[in-house]
Image 1: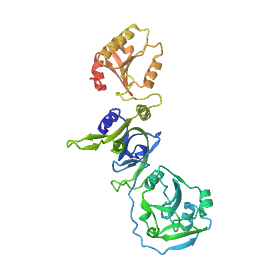
Image 2: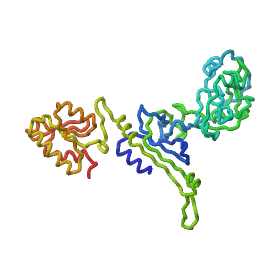
Image 3: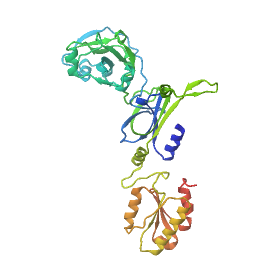
Image 4: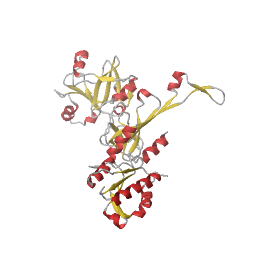
Length: 387
């Protein structure tokens, strides 16, 4: 199926990436999305500038490094009214990355604390998977102070009465700064290893310029994409539940291995149009253009022009070409613009050159004059989807 999808999207000349994605409610061991690259896309993709790594932002990872610093003596410091990461960073003259940000989340009916770098955001999808719940929600500042009597802006992971999920990046650091759970105070030079945690896991959202998790040297960057197809490896999840089994060559019952595949024609059209539009036209690839060829007489009052168009309409259709004959009583310029807007790749113009045995041929943005006897040879060079 993957090979078939690759051929389909390649033939349509789509600029796409195959990205790893969350399996979501569908479940299974693997989900891959075909994402058409376009600035209007609804999904954020994470790509590497040095290798083929590609993943949806929801599940993307990065390479983290282990700190080689010497462990310093922990100290409690006065930080009056310094509540935000930005404020603490400036006040203590330390990078935001060295500040441990503690955030409380509701996971079903349970409260958990997340500890991540001050320059990061929690990836709630990753967190939900770590906690094995369907969704999580951030506890607001008002709720935190009212329900748990924890001062806003000074919350930290030391002696919190909740399970703590520490991001794996923080776990590899030394000498971090965290809230002291006391108004106007923070703790500096905290060793993450002394923090009692329930679990260490990747719960962060990837940033641009992070190091690629595959090649370990490239930098990650964002692109927007439109999902145009997907592949799911379902394994035996549904077969086991349904008791859907087969007999193998030894006559032993085994659950059926399943897959799920989707492709979106409407999304494909939108993506191709977005990737191939110009100010007044759409350059549809030949494989999916509404017609291969448009026949346009400059004047409907010129009998030779109209008769030649009608002759070629029949001849070309018999050879398998999809042809639109524009026989409207419209100005020539209107006809050409309409054919470009519809997105017909080839326009054959029958006009003043006809008296010399020639016509004008337009192929996307190219234009030239050829002998009328050479039309079919010229078309064979341009159209390879016939025969």
